Each structure stands twice: as C-alpha cells, then as structure tokens.
Image (cartoon, rainbow, N blue to C red; front, side, top):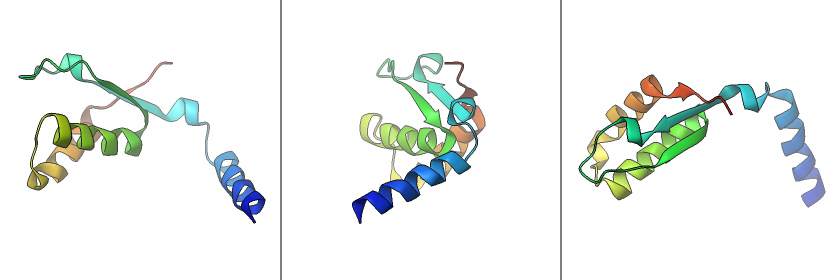
Length: 83
C-alpha cells in the first residue's frame, strides 16, 4: 500500500511543470525590521507564502488578523529564485 501512495505522489510530481523554474524567494534582509531578521525563504510560491506567514507570526509576533494582508504582501513581493 505504501508503495502505491509513493508512486501516486511521484506521478503527480512528474505531471507538474519543472519545480526548479517555479521557485520563489523572500529575503528579509531587504526589508527592515526591529529584530534585524536575516531569514530567506525559497520554494514554490505557496510554500514561501505559508512559511513566510508562520515566520512573521512566530518570530515577529504578527497577529492572526494580519494573516491575509501579510500573505498577500508575500505573494506580491516574492521574487523568482535563480538557484
């Protein structure tokens, strides 16, 4: 059973477009913060958005009601990653 699940996951990955060309990044060194944050997050856009939000909430103490605005900001400001 596990083998079938892994195969389905692999098939899904192969059907999607090249993941390398769809990588994005947000580098907090470009955006001043009180904590002088140096975190950079790279991955698929929605991964960057989710992790960026979690980082903002946990490390920078943003509130739940700011989630949509911060996620939108990350989507609009994420850059293509050239790695």
